[in-house]
Image (cartoon, rainbow, N blue to C red; front, side):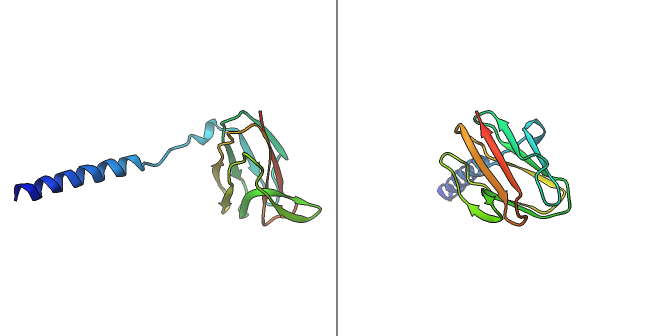
Length: 126
């Protein structure tokens, strides 16, 4: 009986450690470089950030946006993840925000909205 109780305590302790290790990372988005999105466009076409930073994308409209790696070229979507780019596949449902990144490698990266033609963002990482 004592062995069963001891095993139960050990299992509960290990489970507590696992749950604590999987905690949610809270990103303070107010301190991040920010790009705003309108109904069908980015409010700025590019942003320059430092290596290791994330970018907070803010959807100021009620429009849905699906942001991913690549760009629109002459009206044609060209999905492409450049070397060193973080994988981006973020959906915004309108009047919300979420960070993307981190961008850990210096370079120029391209993001676009799969829904809105010619909605491109260039992220320059120094």
